[in-house]
Length: 328
Image (cartoon, rainbow, N blue to C red; front, top):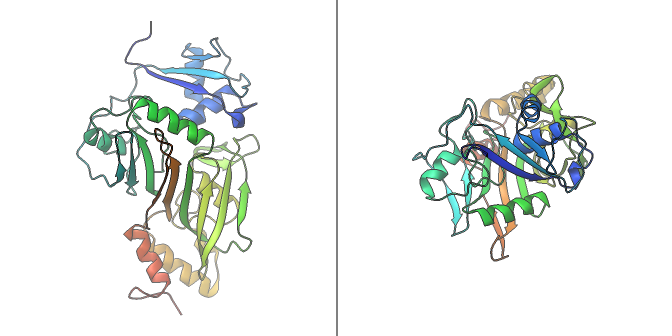
């Protein structure tokens, strides 16, 4: 009999997981290292269509995988009275405007101060279908990405929203600033993403990665950067940042995928880009629009979030609206 304290995940492989190795697919689905997944398989904590798999088991769409995470390194997430900007709330869900710098759920190195801790303080009985450390969480944003997230308040809403995310029925639009100029937009970036083989803290475009598609459109062309909108067709870890960097146009302020990129420019562009880099306090990436059908009523719901002040100030500087505006 399973220990009730264990974190149990029931997963169904979608069309984009067809042909994937089990260990790779589970590592992406649950944000675990492949080494951790291999250990779980070896210890009998993973079942595949009711049986015992190999870590390299090839998957097919419709396969059912159950993963049980034994009582962990992390304690159960506890409620914390933290600032939380709620854009919408009803009996079934919340839409939250996450601040930059806030981690979505507890993880090693971030045991407290997360969005989940704040949600547990605000909502008495939050959905547990995502596990004790990720209650109600349908999708995530990177720590330094701000913007809109939908959170389920009970299990049925979580199941419906998670399925809508899997079938690409939840629309997510981001605003970003990227170095250089993307001249041919709108641009569809179709490039598979997986762990960087040389550094597992990074993701990369790799031939055996999971399918990933982003749609990019330039909104403003600046001196040596563009302000763009990016719509996600899929939702891989760091997808926008990896895709834009793979095109030679990393996100401004992205310390992982574009650190020091502006130093490679020359002439006036170099001076302008260096000045912009000093003004952008973190990666210039904001989840500005979220659209989905309400999981219970079917009503189409659309939410918009303007750029937060830290990024909006940089745009004003580019437009010459801030003191000490852009170089002539």
